[in-house]
Length: 253
Image 1 (spheres, rainbow, N blue to C red):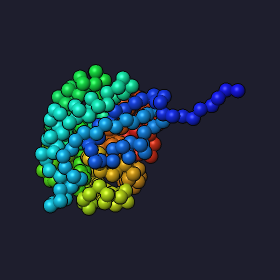
Image 2: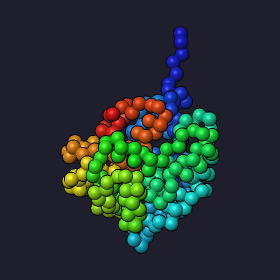
Image 3: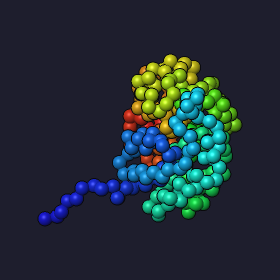
Image 4: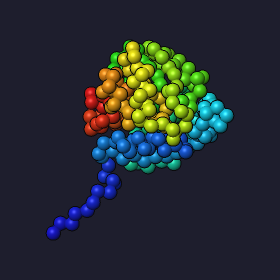
C-alpha cells in the first residue's frame, strides 16, 4: 500500500524572498492571505530605525526612510536570505521609491542575489498605472506618513509620467493597529470621485481586505502596495496572476 504524506510546503513552485521592515507584520499578513497555491513566502527583515509612529506627532520621519534607501540595511537582509531556492526577491517598502532611485537599488540588490530578479513596490505601482492606463490617479498614503513624504510620492509619480489628481494621507487614526477594512472602505469610497485609479502606498498599511468592496461599490480600480507587489512579482517570475482572487481587478488580467 502506497504511503500518503501531507503537504509540507517544501515543493513550492515559486519561492519569494520578501524583504520586510523590522517590527512590521503587515506585508507578511497580507501576502499570506493573498498568495496563490504553490507560492511560498520567506521573509527577511531589515532595520527601520523608527517606531510605527513618532510619539510627538503620530508621524514617521523622512530620515529613517533615507537610511533604508541607502546601501546597508536591505543588502544585509537579502544576504541573510540568499539560498538557491529563492526565485525572486520583493521589497515590501513603498517609501524608498519616493526618496531614492529604484534602478540603482534593484541593480545593487540583484547583484547580491546572484542575478535573480528583485522587485520593488515602486516598480509594481508604476506597472499597475500602465496596466490600467490610468489618467487621474489618487495616491493614498498611511496616516502616519508626513505631508512631506506624500509630496515626495507625488513628485516621484509625476517624474514617471503619472497624472496625479490628488495625493494625501488617509483621513484615519494613525497607528497600524487603528486601521480596519471597514473604515478604509468608507474613507476611500468618499475620496474616490473623479478618479480612475487608487494607489495605496505603505506596505504596512492594512488595506487589501477593503479592495474588492471599494471596487464593487465605486467601479474604480484600487491597487495597494501589497497587491501591486504580489502581482508584479508573479509577473516577474513568469507566473499567472489570475489565481489570486478577491483582492482586486489587477489580478484578473
